[in-house]
Amino acid sequence: MPENMPETRINVFNDSPARVQTPAPQAPQVEYASLMERFVALLIDYGLIMIPGQVILMLATRNMELEMAHIYALTGLLNAVFVLYMAVFSCGGRVPLGKKLVGIAVASADDPEAPIGFMRALLRSVGYYFSAGLLMCGFLMAFFEERKRALEDFMGRSVVVRLRPKGIMETVAITLTGLAIIAAYAGVFYSQTFAKGSAVQLAYIDRAQKTLEDLSLLQEIHRSQYGYFTNDLQRLVLLSGDPVQFQRDIQRTLDRRGFKLGVSRNTYKIIARAKDTRHTQVVFIPYRDR
Image (cartoon, rainbow, N blue to C red; front, side, top):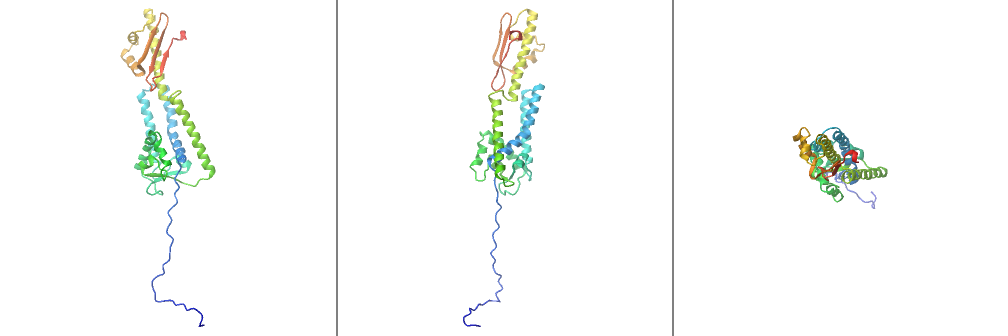
C-alpha cells in the first residue's frame, strides 16, 4: 500500500442497521371553498326545490280556496323538503347538485377527506336558516374564519372543500353567475316587499277583494228588496243566506279597523283593509260609477 494513501477502516462486525432518513409523509393539501362558490351552490340547490314549489303554490292559491294557514303550511313543507334534500345529499360522500356543478363538497371538520354523517348534515342544513335569520351574518363568518367556515359549518362540525382546482375562466364564470343570482333574488325581494308582494300577500288581498264583491252583491239585493242601499253591515250579512259563515269570511279576510261602508242615494262605496302584513287597502266601487 502506498504510504500516502489514507486508510479506511470498516467494522464488519457492527450488526446495527444503518439509519436511513425517510421523508415525513406530507399532509394532503386541502383547498377550502370560497364564499362566492358556496353562495352560488346554495342558491342553485335552494332554487331547485323552492322555484317549482313556489310555482305550484301560486297556482294553487289562484285556483283553489286555500286558507292562509294552508299557504303557510305548504311554504313550511317546501323548506322542510329543502332541509332534508341538503341533509341527505351532504352526507355519506354524496354532493348536492349545486355543489357538484360548482365543484365543492361538504366534509368533516376533523378530517377534511372524510364525509359527515346524516345527523351532522341535518344540523348543518338547519343552520342555513340560523345564518340567514341573523341578517346573513352567519354566512359572513366565512370571511373571517381560517377555514372559511360559516355558522352552519360550526353547527354541523363541517368544512366545505374544493373537489378540483379551478382555472381563471371557471372562477370568473362562478363569480358572474353569483352576481347574476344576487341581482335576480334582489329583484324578487324588492317585488315581494315593496311592489306587488309575495304570493301569500297577494292571496290575502285577493280574498279581501272578493269579500267586498260579495258585499256589493248583497247591496244590490238589498236595494232590489227595499229600494235603497244600506250602511248597516248586519243587514247585508243577514241577506247572505248563511250569516254565520259569511261573518266568519269577513273576519278571516278583512281587518275590522278601517272598514267603511259609505252610502248615498244612488250609489255606495266599500273601503277595507286586507289581513296581509301591510294591511293593504282594498276598495270597491260599483262598475256603473267607475
